[in-house]
Image 1 (cartoon, rainbow, N blue to C red):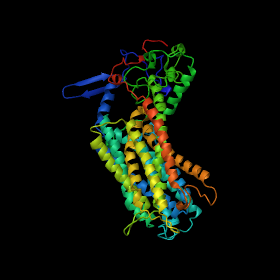
Image 2: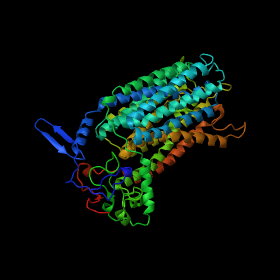
Image 3: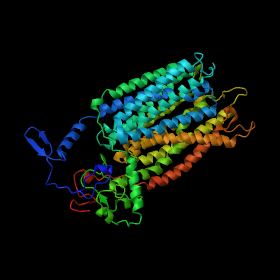
Image 4: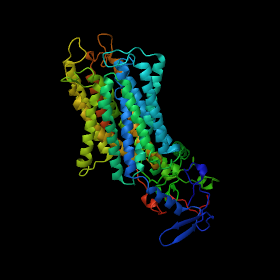
Length: 608
Protein backbone atom coordinates (compact mmCIF):
# COMPACT_ATOMS: atom_id res chain seq x y z
CA UNK A 1 0.00 0.00 0.00
CA UNK A 2 1.43 3.38 -0.98
CA UNK A 3 1.81 5.93 1.76
CA UNK A 4 1.38 9.68 1.72
CA UNK A 5 4.36 11.95 1.26
CA UNK A 6 4.09 15.40 2.88
CA UNK A 7 6.03 16.83 -0.03
CA UNK A 8 3.22 15.96 -2.41
CA UNK A 9 0.57 18.30 -1.00
CA UNK A 10 -1.32 15.29 0.28
CA UNK A 11 -2.46 14.59 -3.24
CA UNK A 12 -0.44 11.64 -4.54
CA UNK A 13 1.13 8.86 -2.56
CA UNK A 14 4.76 8.12 -3.56
CA UNK A 15 5.26 4.92 -5.47
CA UNK A 16 8.85 4.22 -4.38
CA UNK A 17 8.28 3.72 -0.66
CA UNK A 18 7.50 0.38 0.87
CA UNK A 19 5.43 -0.26 3.90
CA UNK A 20 5.69 -3.36 5.99
CA UNK A 21 2.81 -4.38 8.17
CA UNK A 22 5.14 -6.68 10.12
CA UNK A 23 7.92 -4.22 10.92
CA UNK A 24 6.11 -1.40 12.66
CA UNK A 25 8.21 1.28 14.24
CA UNK A 26 7.89 1.54 17.95
CA UNK A 27 5.29 4.17 18.75
CA UNK A 28 3.81 5.31 21.98
CA UNK A 29 1.70 2.88 23.93
CA UNK A 30 -2.01 3.34 23.35
CA UNK A 31 -4.14 1.98 26.14
CA UNK A 32 -7.82 1.23 25.71
CA UNK A 33 -9.68 0.33 28.84
CA UNK A 34 -13.18 -1.14 28.95
CA UNK A 35 -15.14 -3.09 31.55
CA UNK A 36 -13.14 -6.27 31.13
CA UNK A 37 -9.64 -5.70 29.87
CA UNK A 38 -6.78 -3.41 29.05
CA UNK A 39 -5.19 -3.74 25.66
CA UNK A 40 -1.77 -2.28 24.87
CA UNK A 41 -0.86 -1.69 21.31
CA UNK A 42 2.34 -0.45 19.73
CA UNK A 43 1.69 1.08 16.33
CA UNK A 44 3.13 3.93 14.38
CA UNK A 45 -0.25 4.40 12.66
CA UNK A 46 -2.19 4.56 15.94
CA UNK A 47 -5.33 3.38 14.16
CA UNK A 48 -6.98 2.59 17.46
CA UNK A 49 -6.23 6.04 18.77
CA UNK A 50 -7.78 7.57 15.66
CA UNK A 51 -10.92 5.50 16.15
CA UNK A 52 -11.13 6.63 19.77
CA UNK A 53 -10.79 10.26 18.71
CA UNK A 54 -13.51 9.85 16.09
CA UNK A 55 -15.78 8.19 18.65
CA UNK A 56 -15.17 11.04 21.09
CA UNK A 57 -15.83 13.58 18.33
CA UNK A 58 -19.15 11.87 17.56
CA UNK A 59 -20.31 12.66 21.09
CA UNK A 60 -20.13 16.36 20.26
CA UNK A 61 -22.39 18.22 17.93
CA UNK A 62 -26.03 17.16 17.62
CA UNK A 63 -29.26 19.04 17.08
CA UNK A 64 -28.74 21.28 20.14
CA UNK A 65 -25.69 22.88 18.54
CA UNK A 66 -27.43 22.93 15.17
CA UNK A 67 -30.36 24.86 16.69
CA UNK A 68 -27.95 27.40 18.22
CA UNK A 69 -26.45 27.91 14.77
CA UNK A 70 -29.94 28.34 13.31
CA UNK A 71 -30.60 31.04 15.94
CA UNK A 72 -27.30 32.66 14.98
CA UNK A 73 -28.41 32.62 11.36
CA UNK A 74 -31.74 34.27 12.21
CA UNK A 75 -30.16 37.03 14.31
CA UNK A 76 -27.38 37.73 11.81
CA UNK A 77 -29.91 37.87 8.99
CA UNK A 78 -32.08 40.29 10.99
CA UNK A 79 -29.04 42.57 11.29
CA UNK A 80 -28.09 42.18 7.63
CA UNK A 81 -31.53 42.87 6.21
CA UNK A 82 -31.92 45.76 8.65
CA UNK A 83 -29.19 47.32 6.51
CA UNK A 84 -29.90 45.85 3.09
CA UNK A 85 -33.67 45.64 2.60
CA UNK A 86 -34.16 49.42 2.61
CA UNK A 87 -30.77 50.33 1.18
CA UNK A 88 -32.20 51.41 -2.18
CA UNK A 89 -34.42 53.99 -0.45
CA UNK A 90 -31.55 55.12 1.79
CA UNK A 91 -29.51 55.84 -1.34
CA UNK A 92 -32.30 57.82 -2.99
CA UNK A 93 -33.64 59.68 0.07
CA UNK A 94 -30.49 60.23 2.13
CA UNK A 95 -27.63 60.01 -0.36
CA UNK A 96 -29.56 61.77 -3.14
CA UNK A 97 -29.08 59.17 -5.88
CA UNK A 98 -31.47 58.56 -8.80
CA UNK A 99 -33.57 55.42 -9.23
CA UNK A 100 -31.38 53.70 -11.83
CA UNK A 101 -28.15 54.62 -10.02
CA UNK A 102 -29.50 53.42 -6.67
CA UNK A 103 -30.80 50.15 -8.15
CA UNK A 104 -27.41 49.50 -9.76
CA UNK A 105 -25.51 50.29 -6.55
CA UNK A 106 -27.72 47.95 -4.54
CA UNK A 107 -27.25 45.20 -7.12
CA UNK A 108 -23.47 45.65 -7.01
CA UNK A 109 -23.42 45.71 -3.22
CA UNK A 110 -25.64 42.63 -2.93
CA UNK A 111 -23.51 40.88 -5.53
CA UNK A 112 -20.41 41.73 -3.51
CA UNK A 113 -22.02 40.23 -0.40
CA UNK A 114 -22.40 36.90 -2.12
CA UNK A 115 -19.06 37.01 -3.96
CA UNK A 116 -17.33 37.29 -0.59
CA UNK A 117 -18.89 33.91 0.20
CA UNK A 118 -16.29 32.40 -2.14
CA UNK A 119 -13.53 34.05 -0.11
CA UNK A 120 -14.92 32.67 3.13
CA UNK A 121 -15.40 29.20 1.63
CA UNK A 122 -11.84 29.11 0.30
CA UNK A 123 -10.28 30.16 3.61
CA UNK A 124 -12.46 27.69 5.50
CA UNK A 125 -11.76 24.69 3.26
CA UNK A 126 -8.06 25.46 2.90
CA UNK A 127 -6.65 26.99 6.07
CA UNK A 128 -8.87 28.32 8.86
CA UNK A 129 -11.55 25.67 9.27
CA UNK A 130 -15.26 26.44 9.62
CA UNK A 131 -15.38 27.66 13.21
CA UNK A 132 -12.55 30.19 12.93
CA UNK A 133 -13.85 31.44 9.57
CA UNK A 134 -17.33 32.05 11.01
CA UNK A 135 -15.87 33.83 14.05
CA UNK A 136 -13.58 36.19 12.12
CA UNK A 137 -16.18 37.19 9.54
CA UNK A 138 -18.90 37.72 12.14
CA UNK A 139 -16.58 40.09 14.03
CA UNK A 140 -16.03 42.02 10.78
CA UNK A 141 -19.82 42.08 10.31
CA UNK A 142 -20.35 43.58 13.77
CA UNK A 143 -17.70 46.25 13.08
CA UNK A 144 -19.38 47.15 9.77
CA UNK A 145 -22.87 47.56 11.27
CA UNK A 146 -21.41 49.57 14.16
CA UNK A 147 -19.57 51.90 11.77
CA UNK A 148 -22.75 52.36 9.70
CA UNK A 149 -24.69 53.35 12.84
CA UNK A 150 -21.94 55.86 13.68
CA UNK A 151 -21.74 57.49 10.26
CA UNK A 152 -25.51 57.79 9.87
CA UNK A 153 -25.81 59.44 13.30
CA UNK A 154 -22.97 61.93 12.98
CA UNK A 155 -22.63 62.55 9.23
CA UNK A 156 -25.61 61.58 7.07
CA UNK A 157 -28.97 62.10 8.84
CA UNK A 158 -28.90 65.89 8.83
CA UNK A 159 -31.34 67.33 9.88
CA UNK A 160 -32.73 64.73 12.26
CA UNK A 161 -35.68 62.82 10.81
CA UNK A 162 -34.73 63.43 7.19
CA UNK A 163 -34.99 60.68 4.62
CA UNK A 164 -38.64 59.96 5.36
CA UNK A 165 -39.72 60.79 1.82
CA UNK A 166 -40.71 64.37 2.71
CA UNK A 167 -37.84 66.01 4.59
CA UNK A 168 -34.77 66.25 2.36
CA UNK A 169 -31.35 65.46 3.86
CA UNK A 170 -28.41 67.85 3.55
CA UNK A 171 -25.76 66.79 1.02
CA UNK A 172 -23.28 64.44 2.68
CA UNK A 173 -19.64 65.43 3.08
CA UNK A 174 -16.97 63.45 1.17
CA UNK A 175 -15.78 62.04 4.51
CA UNK A 176 -19.31 60.91 5.38
CA UNK A 177 -19.77 59.29 1.98
CA UNK A 178 -16.41 57.51 2.28
CA UNK A 179 -17.17 56.12 5.74
CA UNK A 180 -20.64 55.07 4.57
CA UNK A 181 -19.30 52.98 1.70
CA UNK A 182 -16.56 51.52 3.91
CA UNK A 183 -19.16 50.45 6.48
CA UNK A 184 -21.63 48.86 4.06
CA UNK A 185 -18.87 46.93 2.32
CA UNK A 186 -17.56 45.71 5.68
CA UNK A 187 -21.11 44.48 6.27
CA UNK A 188 -20.98 42.78 2.86
CA UNK A 189 -17.59 41.21 3.60
CA UNK A 190 -18.55 39.97 7.05
CA UNK A 191 -22.01 38.59 6.26
CA UNK A 192 -21.03 37.09 2.92
CA UNK A 193 -17.85 35.53 4.26
CA UNK A 194 -19.47 33.50 7.01
CA UNK A 195 -22.82 32.50 5.47
CA UNK A 196 -21.90 29.39 3.43
CA UNK A 197 -19.44 28.24 6.08
CA UNK A 198 -22.14 28.54 8.75
CA UNK A 199 -24.46 26.30 6.72
CA UNK A 200 -21.76 23.64 6.32
CA UNK A 201 -20.69 23.98 9.96
CA UNK A 202 -24.28 23.38 11.02
CA UNK A 203 -24.51 20.27 8.83
CA UNK A 204 -21.26 19.04 10.44
CA UNK A 205 -23.01 18.91 13.81
CA UNK A 206 -25.32 16.17 12.52
CA UNK A 207 -24.45 12.56 11.77
CA UNK A 208 -24.13 11.41 8.16
CA UNK A 209 -27.87 11.09 7.67
CA UNK A 210 -29.26 12.53 4.44
CA UNK A 211 -32.70 13.23 5.92
CA UNK A 212 -31.28 15.11 8.93
CA UNK A 213 -29.07 17.27 6.77
CA UNK A 214 -31.88 17.92 4.29
CA UNK A 215 -34.05 19.01 7.21
CA UNK A 216 -31.25 21.25 8.52
CA UNK A 217 -30.86 23.07 5.19
CA UNK A 218 -34.62 23.65 5.06
CA UNK A 219 -34.61 25.04 8.60
CA UNK A 220 -31.50 27.07 7.78
CA UNK A 221 -33.35 28.90 5.02
CA UNK A 222 -36.39 29.11 7.29
CA UNK A 223 -34.27 30.79 10.01
CA UNK A 224 -32.94 33.22 7.43
CA UNK A 225 -36.48 34.29 6.66
CA UNK A 226 -37.47 34.54 10.33
CA UNK A 227 -34.73 37.12 10.78
CA UNK A 228 -35.72 38.88 7.59
CA UNK A 229 -39.36 39.01 8.73
CA UNK A 230 -38.55 41.34 11.64
CA UNK A 231 -36.30 43.50 9.47
CA UNK A 232 -38.82 43.75 6.66
CA UNK A 233 -41.66 44.78 8.95
CA UNK A 234 -40.62 46.55 12.16
CA UNK A 235 -37.23 47.95 11.12
CA UNK A 236 -38.38 48.95 7.64
CA UNK A 237 -41.38 50.78 9.11
CA UNK A 238 -39.22 52.90 11.41
CA UNK A 239 -36.58 53.53 8.74
CA UNK A 240 -39.33 54.63 6.36
CA UNK A 241 -40.29 57.23 8.97
CA UNK A 242 -36.76 58.65 8.95
CA UNK A 243 -35.45 56.73 12.00
CA UNK A 244 -32.55 55.28 10.03
CA UNK A 245 -29.95 55.42 12.82
CA UNK A 246 -32.28 53.74 15.30
CA UNK A 247 -32.88 50.93 12.80
CA UNK A 248 -29.13 50.45 12.31
CA UNK A 249 -28.59 50.36 16.09
CA UNK A 250 -31.15 47.56 16.42
CA UNK A 251 -29.27 45.70 13.69
CA UNK A 252 -26.03 46.23 15.62
CA UNK A 253 -27.54 44.78 18.79
CA UNK A 254 -28.81 41.75 16.88
CA UNK A 255 -25.38 41.17 15.31
CA UNK A 256 -23.68 41.29 18.72
CA UNK A 257 -26.17 38.81 20.24
CA UNK A 258 -25.70 36.52 17.22
CA UNK A 259 -21.91 36.52 17.73
CA UNK A 260 -22.26 35.82 21.45
CA UNK A 261 -24.67 32.93 20.78
CA UNK A 262 -22.24 31.46 18.26
CA UNK A 263 -19.28 31.59 20.63
CA UNK A 264 -21.13 30.19 23.67
CA UNK A 265 -21.00 26.43 22.85
CA UNK A 266 -17.46 26.53 21.42
CA UNK A 267 -16.31 23.46 23.38
CA UNK A 268 -19.35 21.43 22.34
CA UNK A 269 -19.08 21.89 18.57
CA UNK A 270 -18.03 19.09 16.26
CA UNK A 271 -15.08 20.24 14.17
CA UNK A 272 -13.88 19.17 10.73
CA UNK A 273 -10.28 20.01 9.90
CA UNK A 274 -9.52 21.91 6.68
CA UNK A 275 -8.32 19.77 3.77
CA UNK A 276 -5.72 22.15 2.39
CA UNK A 277 -5.72 24.44 -0.61
CA UNK A 278 -7.75 22.73 -3.38
CA UNK A 279 -6.42 24.93 -6.18
CA UNK A 280 -3.08 23.11 -6.57
CA UNK A 281 -4.87 19.74 -6.43
CA UNK A 282 -7.19 20.68 -9.28
CA UNK A 283 -4.35 22.31 -11.24
CA UNK A 284 -2.23 19.17 -10.86
CA UNK A 285 -4.92 17.09 -12.56
CA UNK A 286 -4.93 19.32 -15.63
CA UNK A 287 -1.13 19.58 -15.79
CA UNK A 288 -0.75 15.81 -15.44
CA UNK A 289 -3.39 15.30 -18.13
CA UNK A 290 -1.57 17.67 -20.50
CA UNK A 291 1.74 15.88 -19.90
CA UNK A 292 0.15 12.52 -20.71
CA UNK A 293 -2.06 13.65 -23.57
CA UNK A 294 -0.53 11.09 -25.92
CA UNK A 295 -0.96 8.26 -23.40
CA UNK A 296 -3.69 5.75 -24.25
CA UNK A 297 -6.29 5.48 -21.52
CA UNK A 298 -6.89 1.92 -20.28
CA UNK A 299 -10.29 0.44 -21.13
CA UNK A 300 -10.64 -0.81 -17.58
CA UNK A 301 -10.70 2.08 -15.13
CA UNK A 302 -9.56 -0.31 -12.37
CA UNK A 303 -6.06 -0.01 -13.85
CA UNK A 304 -5.91 3.65 -12.88
CA UNK A 305 -3.85 4.71 -9.88
CA UNK A 306 -5.42 4.87 -6.44
CA UNK A 307 -3.91 4.57 -2.97
CA UNK A 308 -4.71 1.61 -0.75
CA UNK A 309 -6.77 1.71 2.41
CA UNK A 310 -9.94 3.43 3.53
CA UNK A 311 -8.64 7.00 3.17
CA UNK A 312 -7.88 8.87 -0.01
CA UNK A 313 -4.61 10.69 -0.62
CA UNK A 314 -6.43 13.97 0.03
CA UNK A 315 -6.37 14.78 3.72
CA UNK A 316 -9.79 14.31 5.33
CA UNK A 317 -11.51 13.25 2.10
CA UNK A 318 -13.26 9.99 1.30
CA UNK A 319 -12.45 8.10 -1.87
CA UNK A 320 -14.63 8.78 -4.91
CA UNK A 321 -15.72 6.22 -7.50
CA UNK A 322 -14.62 6.65 -11.08
CA UNK A 323 -17.18 8.48 -13.27
CA UNK A 324 -17.73 8.44 -17.03
CA UNK A 325 -17.74 12.21 -17.51
CA UNK A 326 -14.67 14.15 -18.70
CA UNK A 327 -12.79 10.87 -19.17
CA UNK A 328 -9.91 12.68 -20.87
CA UNK A 329 -8.82 13.68 -17.35
CA UNK A 330 -8.29 9.98 -16.52
CA UNK A 331 -4.89 10.31 -18.18
CA UNK A 332 -3.68 12.02 -15.00
CA UNK A 333 -4.19 8.70 -13.15
CA UNK A 334 -2.53 6.45 -15.75
CA UNK A 335 0.64 4.84 -14.40
CA UNK A 336 3.37 5.10 -17.06
CA UNK A 337 6.90 3.71 -17.11
CA UNK A 338 8.21 7.15 -16.19
CA UNK A 339 6.04 7.04 -13.08
CA UNK A 340 7.32 3.59 -12.20
CA UNK A 341 10.97 4.53 -12.74
CA UNK A 342 10.81 7.85 -10.95
CA UNK A 343 12.96 8.36 -7.87
CA UNK A 344 10.20 10.27 -6.06
CA UNK A 345 6.54 10.92 -6.51
CA UNK A 346 5.53 13.83 -8.70
CA UNK A 347 2.08 15.19 -7.99
CA UNK A 348 2.17 17.10 -11.26
CA UNK A 349 2.59 13.87 -13.26
CA UNK A 350 0.46 11.29 -11.44
CA UNK A 351 -2.79 11.87 -9.55
CA UNK A 352 -5.03 9.42 -7.72
CA UNK A 353 -8.50 8.60 -9.05
CA UNK A 354 -10.07 10.49 -6.15
CA UNK A 355 -8.05 13.59 -7.00
CA UNK A 356 -9.09 13.33 -10.65
CA UNK A 357 -12.72 12.86 -9.62
CA UNK A 358 -12.48 15.94 -7.41
CA UNK A 359 -11.55 18.00 -10.47
CA UNK A 360 -14.33 16.31 -12.45
CA UNK A 361 -16.86 17.19 -9.74
CA UNK A 362 -15.98 20.87 -10.08
CA UNK A 363 -16.42 20.70 -13.86
CA UNK A 364 -19.72 18.80 -13.61
CA UNK A 365 -21.16 21.32 -11.16
CA UNK A 366 -20.27 24.40 -13.23
CA UNK A 367 -22.95 24.04 -15.96
CA UNK A 368 -25.68 23.49 -13.36
CA UNK A 369 -24.43 26.46 -11.37
CA UNK A 370 -24.33 28.75 -14.41
CA UNK A 371 -27.96 27.90 -15.15
CA UNK A 372 -28.99 29.22 -11.72
CA UNK A 373 -27.67 32.74 -12.35
CA UNK A 374 -30.71 33.91 -14.33
CA UNK A 375 -32.94 32.83 -11.45
CA UNK A 376 -30.83 35.02 -9.16
CA UNK A 377 -31.56 37.93 -11.53
CA UNK A 378 -35.24 37.28 -10.76
CA UNK A 379 -34.58 37.12 -7.02
CA UNK A 380 -32.60 40.36 -6.88
CA UNK A 381 -35.50 42.38 -8.27
CA UNK A 382 -37.14 42.20 -4.83
CA UNK A 383 -34.43 44.42 -3.34
CA UNK A 384 -34.41 46.93 -6.18
CA UNK A 385 -37.10 47.30 -8.84
CA UNK A 386 -39.91 45.76 -6.77
CA UNK A 387 -39.23 48.37 -4.07
CA UNK A 388 -39.05 51.22 -6.57
CA UNK A 389 -42.27 49.99 -8.20
CA UNK A 390 -44.05 49.87 -4.84
CA UNK A 391 -42.79 53.35 -3.98
CA UNK A 392 -44.90 54.83 -6.84
CA UNK A 393 -48.09 52.94 -5.98
CA UNK A 394 -50.90 53.74 -3.55
CA UNK A 395 -49.32 52.55 -0.30
CA UNK A 396 -52.30 53.28 1.98
CA UNK A 397 -54.73 50.69 3.28
CA UNK A 398 -57.25 52.91 4.98
CA UNK A 399 -55.12 55.31 7.00
CA UNK A 400 -52.23 52.87 7.42
CA UNK A 401 -49.17 53.46 5.25
CA UNK A 402 -47.28 50.38 4.00
CA UNK A 403 -43.57 51.03 3.28
CA UNK A 404 -42.63 49.67 -0.15
CA UNK A 405 -39.80 47.54 1.28
CA UNK A 406 -42.22 45.94 3.75
CA UNK A 407 -44.03 44.20 0.93
CA UNK A 408 -41.28 41.60 1.04
CA UNK A 409 -43.02 40.27 4.14
CA UNK A 410 -45.28 38.42 1.69
CA UNK A 411 -42.20 36.78 0.23
CA UNK A 412 -41.19 35.65 3.73
CA UNK A 413 -44.66 34.37 4.60
CA UNK A 414 -44.68 32.50 1.30
CA UNK A 415 -41.35 30.88 2.27
CA UNK A 416 -42.80 29.84 5.64
CA UNK A 417 -45.91 28.31 4.10
CA UNK A 418 -44.08 26.69 1.19
CA UNK A 419 -41.44 25.18 3.51
CA UNK A 420 -44.15 23.71 5.73
CA UNK A 421 -46.09 22.32 2.79
CA UNK A 422 -42.98 20.82 1.26
CA UNK A 423 -41.55 19.25 4.43
CA UNK A 424 -44.84 17.88 5.81
CA UNK A 425 -47.19 17.43 2.85
CA UNK A 426 -45.18 16.92 -0.35
CA UNK A 427 -41.93 15.35 0.88
CA UNK A 428 -43.45 12.35 2.76
CA UNK A 429 -45.20 11.19 -0.44
CA UNK A 430 -43.17 12.59 -3.33
CA UNK A 431 -39.43 13.05 -3.00
CA UNK A 432 -38.19 15.04 -5.97
CA UNK A 433 -34.45 15.21 -6.47
CA UNK A 434 -32.60 18.46 -5.82
CA UNK A 435 -32.28 19.01 -9.59
CA UNK A 436 -36.03 18.59 -10.05
CA UNK A 437 -36.74 21.05 -7.25
CA UNK A 438 -34.38 23.61 -8.74
CA UNK A 439 -36.18 23.30 -12.09
CA UNK A 440 -39.55 23.81 -10.39
CA UNK A 441 -38.16 26.88 -8.65
CA UNK A 442 -37.06 28.34 -11.98
CA UNK A 443 -40.54 27.85 -13.46
CA UNK A 444 -42.20 29.59 -10.50
CA UNK A 445 -39.66 32.41 -10.80
CA UNK A 446 -40.67 32.94 -14.42
CA UNK A 447 -44.30 33.21 -13.28
CA UNK A 448 -43.23 35.85 -10.73
CA UNK A 449 -41.71 38.03 -13.47
CA UNK A 450 -44.84 37.73 -15.58
CA UNK A 451 -46.94 38.76 -12.56
CA UNK A 452 -44.65 41.76 -11.91
CA UNK A 453 -44.96 42.84 -15.56
CA UNK A 454 -48.76 42.60 -15.50
CA UNK A 455 -48.86 44.64 -12.27
CA UNK A 456 -46.72 47.34 -13.87
CA UNK A 457 -49.05 47.49 -16.88
CA UNK A 458 -52.00 48.09 -14.54
CA UNK A 459 -50.01 50.68 -12.57
CA UNK A 460 -49.21 52.68 -15.70
CA UNK A 461 -52.89 52.65 -16.68
CA UNK A 462 -53.85 54.34 -13.40
CA UNK A 463 -51.34 57.16 -13.35
CA UNK A 464 -52.66 60.50 -12.07
CA UNK A 465 -51.19 63.43 -14.06
CA UNK A 466 -48.83 65.53 -11.95
CA UNK A 467 -48.77 62.93 -9.17
CA UNK A 468 -45.90 60.57 -8.33
CA UNK A 469 -48.02 57.68 -7.02
CA UNK A 470 -50.39 55.70 -9.19
CA UNK A 471 -53.91 54.99 -7.96
CA UNK A 472 -53.19 51.28 -8.14
CA UNK A 473 -52.92 49.74 -4.65
CA UNK A 474 -49.54 48.39 -3.57
CA UNK A 475 -51.34 45.17 -2.62
CA UNK A 476 -51.27 44.28 -6.32
CA UNK A 477 -47.63 43.37 -5.71
CA UNK A 478 -48.59 40.47 -3.44
CA UNK A 479 -48.67 37.79 -6.21
CA UNK A 480 -45.15 38.56 -7.45
CA UNK A 481 -43.72 38.45 -3.91
CA UNK A 482 -45.59 35.24 -3.07
CA UNK A 483 -44.35 33.54 -6.24
CA UNK A 484 -40.76 34.56 -5.60
CA UNK A 485 -41.03 33.20 -2.06
CA UNK A 486 -42.38 29.85 -3.25
CA UNK A 487 -39.66 29.62 -5.89
CA UNK A 488 -36.94 30.22 -3.27
CA UNK A 489 -37.93 27.14 -1.29
CA UNK A 490 -37.46 24.97 -4.35
CA UNK A 491 -34.48 26.75 -5.90
CA UNK A 492 -32.25 27.95 -3.05
CA UNK A 493 -32.91 25.15 -0.56
CA UNK A 494 -32.44 22.71 -3.44
CA UNK A 495 -29.17 24.44 -4.32
CA UNK A 496 -27.88 24.24 -0.75
CA UNK A 497 -28.57 20.51 -0.59
CA UNK A 498 -27.34 19.81 -4.12
CA UNK A 499 -24.05 21.71 -4.08
CA UNK A 500 -23.20 20.65 -0.52
CA UNK A 501 -24.03 17.02 -1.22
CA UNK A 502 -22.32 16.82 -4.61
CA UNK A 503 -19.14 18.67 -3.63
CA UNK A 504 -16.13 16.51 -2.66
CA UNK A 505 -15.27 16.38 1.05
CA UNK A 506 -12.40 18.81 0.58
CA UNK A 507 -14.67 21.37 -1.12
CA UNK A 508 -17.82 21.31 1.04
CA UNK A 509 -17.75 25.02 1.85
CA UNK A 510 -17.15 25.81 -1.81
CA UNK A 511 -20.26 23.77 -2.58
CA UNK A 512 -22.35 25.80 -0.14
CA UNK A 513 -20.87 29.06 -1.42
CA UNK A 514 -21.90 28.30 -5.01
CA UNK A 515 -25.49 29.10 -4.04
CA UNK A 516 -24.44 32.54 -2.80
CA UNK A 517 -22.06 33.05 -5.72
CA UNK A 518 -25.04 32.48 -8.00
CA UNK A 519 -26.83 35.30 -6.19
CA UNK A 520 -23.76 37.47 -6.61
CA UNK A 521 -23.54 37.02 -10.36
CA UNK A 522 -27.32 37.41 -10.56
CA UNK A 523 -26.97 40.87 -9.04
CA UNK A 524 -24.12 41.80 -11.37
CA UNK A 525 -26.02 40.50 -14.39
CA UNK A 526 -29.11 42.45 -13.28
CA UNK A 527 -27.05 45.63 -13.01
CA UNK A 528 -25.53 44.98 -16.45
CA UNK A 529 -28.96 44.36 -17.94
CA UNK A 530 -30.29 47.65 -16.53
CA UNK A 531 -27.34 49.54 -18.04
CA UNK A 532 -27.69 47.86 -21.43
CA UNK A 533 -31.45 48.32 -21.56
CA UNK A 534 -31.19 51.98 -20.63
CA UNK A 535 -28.41 52.54 -23.17
CA UNK A 536 -30.57 51.03 -25.93
CA UNK A 537 -34.00 52.41 -24.97
CA UNK A 538 -33.07 55.91 -23.79
CA UNK A 539 -33.18 58.28 -26.77
CA UNK A 540 -33.46 61.85 -25.58
CA UNK A 541 -36.35 63.48 -23.73
CA UNK A 542 -39.00 61.89 -25.93
CA UNK A 543 -37.86 58.37 -25.03
CA UNK A 544 -36.52 58.32 -21.44
CA UNK A 545 -35.98 54.54 -21.49
CA UNK A 546 -37.63 51.60 -19.77
CA UNK A 547 -36.43 52.50 -16.24
CA UNK A 548 -36.16 56.32 -16.09
CA UNK A 549 -35.98 58.54 -13.00
CA UNK A 550 -39.73 59.05 -13.28
CA UNK A 551 -41.10 55.51 -13.57
CA UNK A 552 -44.43 56.90 -14.79
CA UNK A 553 -42.67 57.80 -18.05
CA UNK A 554 -41.03 54.42 -18.49
CA UNK A 555 -41.90 50.82 -19.40
CA UNK A 556 -40.55 48.72 -16.57
CA UNK A 557 -43.04 45.99 -17.50
CA UNK A 558 -40.98 45.27 -20.61
CA UNK A 559 -37.89 44.74 -18.46
CA UNK A 560 -39.77 42.18 -16.34
CA UNK A 561 -40.96 40.36 -19.46
CA UNK A 562 -37.40 40.38 -20.85
CA UNK A 563 -36.17 38.61 -17.70
CA UNK A 564 -39.01 36.08 -18.02
CA UNK A 565 -38.04 35.27 -21.63
CA UNK A 566 -34.36 34.86 -20.72
CA UNK A 567 -35.31 32.62 -17.80
CA UNK A 568 -37.46 30.44 -20.09
CA UNK A 569 -34.49 29.95 -22.43
CA UNK A 570 -32.31 29.23 -19.41
CA UNK A 571 -34.79 26.58 -18.24
CA UNK A 572 -34.44 24.66 -21.50
CA UNK A 573 -30.64 24.71 -21.21
CA UNK A 574 -30.93 23.66 -17.55
CA UNK A 575 -33.01 20.61 -18.48
CA UNK A 576 -30.28 19.46 -20.87
CA UNK A 577 -27.52 19.73 -18.26
CA UNK A 578 -29.67 18.24 -15.48
CA UNK A 579 -30.27 15.15 -17.60
CA UNK A 580 -26.55 14.96 -18.46
CA UNK A 581 -25.33 15.28 -14.87
CA UNK A 582 -23.77 12.24 -13.17
CA UNK A 583 -23.84 12.34 -9.32
CA UNK A 584 -20.75 11.86 -7.17
CA UNK A 585 -20.26 8.33 -5.81
CA UNK A 586 -18.09 7.47 -2.80
CA UNK A 587 -16.31 4.15 -2.40
CA UNK A 588 -18.33 2.96 0.59
CA UNK A 589 -16.76 -0.52 0.63
CA UNK A 590 -13.32 1.01 0.90
CA UNK A 591 -14.51 3.26 3.70
CA UNK A 592 -15.69 0.22 5.62
CA UNK A 593 -12.16 -1.13 5.59
CA UNK A 594 -11.87 -3.19 2.44
CA UNK A 595 -8.58 -2.72 0.66
CA UNK A 596 -9.74 -4.29 -2.53
CA UNK A 597 -12.02 -1.58 -3.83
CA UNK A 598 -12.92 -1.13 -7.44
CA UNK A 599 -9.69 0.69 -8.25
CA UNK A 600 -6.33 -0.82 -8.85
CA UNK A 601 -4.09 -0.18 -5.84
CA UNK A 602 -0.38 0.15 -6.21
CA UNK A 603 1.19 -2.87 -4.55
CA UNK A 604 3.52 -2.47 -1.62
CA UNK A 605 6.00 -4.74 -3.34
CA UNK A 606 6.17 -2.81 -6.59
CA UNK A 607 9.51 -1.12 -7.05
CA UNK A 608 8.87 1.92 -9.17
